Image 1 (cartoon, rainbow, N blue to C red):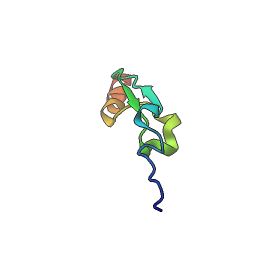
Image 2 (cartoon, rainbow, N blue to C red; image 1 turned 180 degrees about the vertical axis):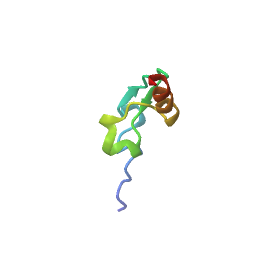
Image 3 (spheres, rainbow, N blue to C red; image 1 turned 90 degrees about the vertical axis):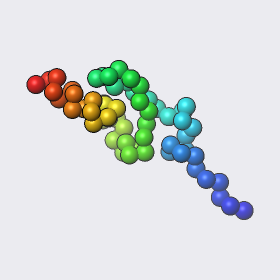
Image 4 (cartoon, rainbow, N blue to C red; image 1 turned 60 degrees about the vertical axis):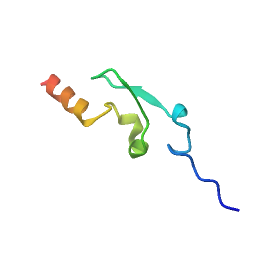
Length: 58
């Protein structure tokens, strides 16, 4: 019998994935596989927001 496949998102349904709010654009963003090891340190939803935060701080 074939082994059941893991669902996308670390074994969680999309509605059950952790989320945060981006401090630059104010939009919520959810956990992504590429952030798996560093989720605690992720602050911005995109490179664009990260660059905007650096421009605003200078």
